[in-house]
Amino acid sequence: MTETRTYSLLGGKIAFISGAGRGIGAAAARLFAKEGAKVVLAARTETQLKAVAEQVRAEGGVADCVRCDLADPASVQAAIDRVLELHGRLDLAFNNGATGTPPVPLDQVPLADFDRLYEVNLRGPWLAMAAEVKAMRASGGGAIVNTSSIGSFGANPALPVYGAAKRALNSLTESAAVAYGPEGIRVNAIAPGTTMTEMIRQWEAASPGLLDQLAQTTPLGRAADPAEIAEAAAWLLSDRASYVTGAVLRVDGGARV
Image 1 (spheres, rainbow, N blue to C red):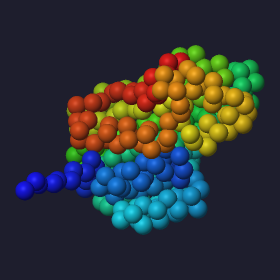
Image 2 (tube, rainbow, N blue to C red):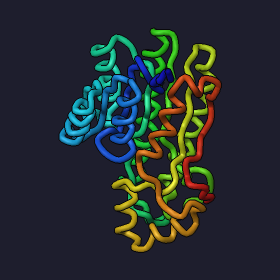
Image 3 (spheres, rainbow, N blue to C red):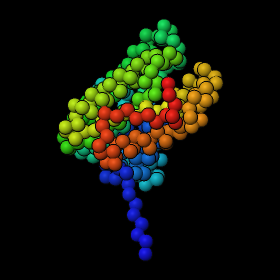
């Protein structure tokens, strides 16, 4: 007789996911739940959140949702508090929520866009990590993954403020990994390349032909599906990546920018 065993990547874990209403976050919600985690989903748009949570439950998973605006410090803390109210602890956090702006040179970025990118893409993950670390410390450790971008690694003339915020997020990730590693908290980031999300579709609408150009500079010759990016985040959050911290993992089809 042949014995068949099923191993779950995130079995028994409590996971918080921001930006979970669509794209990479929604894909992560479905994957994490499939891999055994109980997920708490956060985003600004409640209708999208509820739809994803219902999808997860329909597939046999455990999902709750909480409205969260990453630009609002009180909202971020309340979201983590809600995880603790529901489950008593936090094991995993995927800080995926972000916002974008149309691709324009630095001198054409409106001040309001700069401030919004800072509040959501940098200050938001910082606030989330601070709250998550406190929650994880109380239960003896955990793992955090932030969503960066390959646009953070070099010059980014079309999206200069977006790239700068993501580069700063890489630095926060590395600093947190060093600071909290002794407490059993791992902190990593993923840097997706071109991925078929609403954000990239908006950029394509503003710059027709962009997707084709990006595909030509990607060795795999295509954009990623959000589920492929979620797989990388799931591995980094899992115990199978137990000796990985402070990494910013490219998930870019081989693209170099």
